[in-house]
Image 1 (cartoon, rainbow, N blue to C red):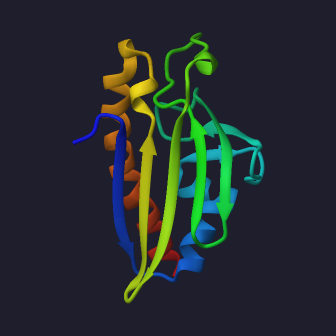
Image 2: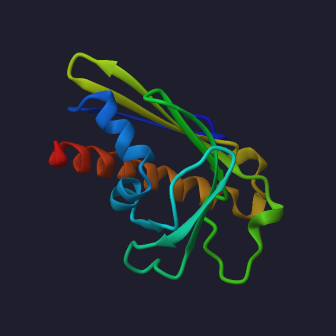
Length: 151
């Protein structure tokens, strides 16, 4: 098991186009990811907002959209598990989050890969990895439930 990357996959009973919309429409993304985004996702632009998950509402969401290849790949970089008040995480290298979509007989296979943990400062690397490992397990379930309930 790599300490540099987290990989999750889930099969969703919905067409690729529907899963793509849930990933890349900022309002829908916010619904299942539990964040209120300030505006739409735009490649090479910073996406900002506020976390809406209970107990974490004080946290800011900030990611730089990297790629949006319709119905195939959506990716962004961010600073994982950046929770400490007053800490400037901007000096740390970000991790890369990639969502890839594949059409399968029953709908869509969604794969999420977050990589780059080995570049995170050692004093917080293990905790960031551990928390995001659990976080992505929950988030793939969240998007599947969101898409399948709305279909």
